[in-house]
Image (cartoon, rainbow, N blue to C red; front, side, top):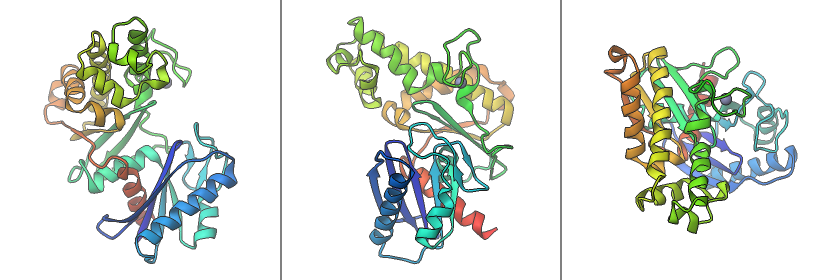
Length: 316
Ligand SMILES: [Zn+2]
């Protein structure tokens, strides 16, 4: 049995998996504050609870998905935004406490790998994963292998320049894809609509404060056909398609899998709009055979992917 762990800024989730990647036991908690010691003791608590929920099987490996940047070789988590862990040798500490080997992986890579072994991307060999959320994460599987690049950071699709004179991005560049197509970008534009009185649903939910604009509320405002809301969402989808087209032209994939809470809540219409934009902009010969699918494992993707990757890295 292997255990997968998804360590996020707001929540953490652990799952015990059998050899066929079936989840036998799960446990989760809200990620608390404090420093390295507090976060690590919480990780241990949630891990042990998942093992107990699965009936205390013998664990051979643990994979832990963390927001980058990480040093996979050293098993170190460096300085992730939104997480109170700083330069922690996480793999080593957890192995000492738990007694089985622990392997770190970037959370986006782990999520895409989960979809590859157990979700929407099963059966494909060349897959691009795009996950619009606070930012836009991306991952690349080529010839059945995760492509990590020289620093383990390959797939920063969110930072492709799509507007040369666009908004300032968190990375320091202007006009990155995530400044126009992430949930944050959509929320920013919708907050303006709420303020201008163009969206009664958003205004009633206090959405002139950008923090109140969650994926579920965006879906609700779309359904209510509030003026301007569909336009904002369509524009984000159009830009997402530009990013997808760049991936198609660069990597010649068979499949683009798109996931995350925004896609789950907005569903097919968002994905179809992005796909239409992708097909209009990518090279016709390359894009013709490319499938576009929504991710299917939701929160379990990174748990399953991290566990599977840990099992493979220890077996090789
Ligand atoms: Zn950027």
